[in-house]
Image 1 (cartoon, rainbow, N blue to C red):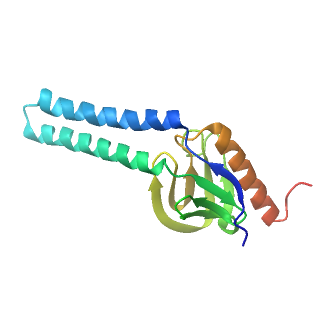
Image 2 (cartoon, rainbow, N blue to C red):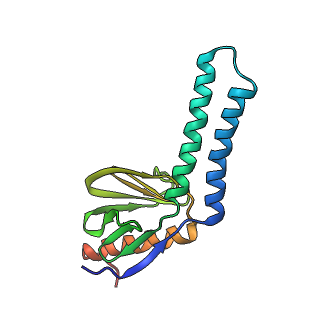
Image 3 (spheres, helix red, strand yellow):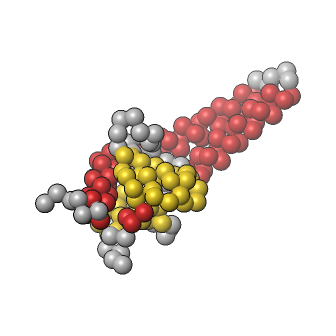
Length: 162
């Protein structure tokens, strides 16, 4: 089992600030509307407060998750906190297609076996057999990562070009 780092995917600092800022701004706007211009119905005010708090919490979660990096080794793709994202042996397909359900500047990995659900907003998520990489990452980092992953899968299957 080789743990040598082949490449690393980090978030773009400017995209990170813009993404988190948008969520925080949305949360602030909801809270402002709830208290500065309260609706006549108390239920609507509670809804606005709930949306505001949820947006702020999501912004906080995105800030924490985008501080991580994804590391590609010979074994597979691993989060910098040690979470296994996708093992090379378990990857069925890497999809960067235009119509793939994928994050901004990202790609999708289809696994052979389903994994547990994980969501790191702005960086990656896994739902069943589908792992999506991207969000606030730069395309200049995600494209080479997808290319290397594709080559590793082809090498594993004995189909790599010579």
